[in-house]
Length: 193
Image (cartoon, rainbow, N blue to C red):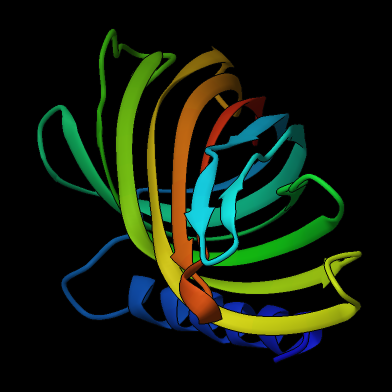
């Protein structure tokens, strides 16, 4: 599956989030748009030919979603996320383009008149990652589409009511044909609108 198809499916998910936010009895408390970057470190893997050491690379992405406030001090959310990183095995490159759908939960701390959704917002998120991977230099060029798991843990600090900064840890795990497991740990920081 191409990156275009991944992005198209993510847009469909985001459209569904928009429709659901207008459902009777539900009120979208807060929408958000995040841009982030950081470092992605992929764990070494044992493959049919032996141990494959991986390197680190930069990662960048964007996330769009919305929060619902069912109870005081806690929100539940749904977001779509698209990012890029290079897994960098020795002797080649594996360009990864994950498109994730994340169910999220956050705490709303230090609220007040100016920060009704909290000034400090720790959160967790988990969901499927639809990963397009293009491997180069490992005996040619190959493209694979697989489904993995994306887990996030982070915290956002609101500088103003509509603008904040955040830091998060991300774990992305996906298995490829032939028994290659790519497990990536990313340390990311970004801005939120």
